[in-house]
Length: 168
Image (tube, rainbow, N blue to C red; front, side, top):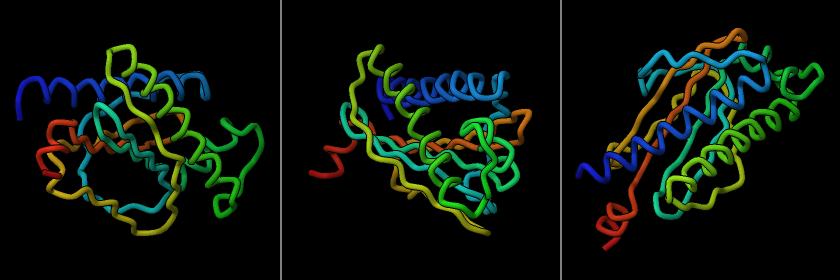
């Protein structure tokens, strides 16, 4: 991967981490701590908000909350108690992914990288494993700690030049 493409991928990662910090600090009053790389294929029980982006950089963001973290964080975001199995919990996680993504997108736009984002998709289950294809040239999974519990961020990035090369 070229140095320029690696810089674009790092910019996506940096902007997503900054967006998570700002969003979670606003919700809970304390910025989450990034504990570094997380085992990418580790199964877990919880709920995941998924967003996709198309533009100068094609990428996806998956924000995964273990059951306990979702239960603790949900009311802070929504302002009322939320049952884990309810549609409200799916809405909260989808909206969290949406808010983080919008912030990350604005940060990337300020760096000259334009993209448009999808509507959120939410997955909830037990013993889940969200797998990103080995064919995706750049992947990262980061673990975060908050006062409400741990969560993770998974990014998959296909720089535009790579997307065209693969498609052609």
